[in-house]
Amino acid sequence: MAKTVIIKIDGKMAMAVLPASHSVDFDRLKEGTGASKVELAGEQEFKDLFPDCEIGAMPPFGNLYGMDVFVAESLSQEVEIASCAGSHSELIRFSYKDFERLVKPKVMKFSVKG
Image (cartoon, rainbow, N blue to C red; front, side, top):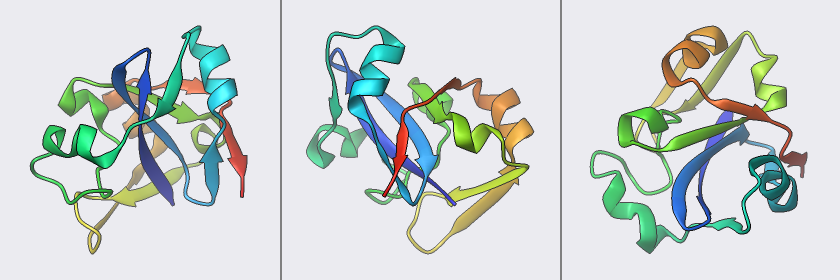
């Protein structure tokens, strides 16, 4: 199961996609992107960017919203991943290869378990 976390990289909204049981290591993400500042975006900052989704249930398809997508390296090793499909009651499952082909995420080590 993957989760989508909305972050700001030097003020620009982006998506971090990582295993649901992990959290974002902002220092690693900052180092990997070469940014001067990486932080969690507040719900009020991004809720209007996803008018077709419930808050916190955005699918990991940032390309549909004009956002860069960063995916945790551990997810890139999976055959299939599952994620929210725009609501807290619907789930979508897809092959990682299809996700990679469609979204073209940047694969990085930025998640930590727990």
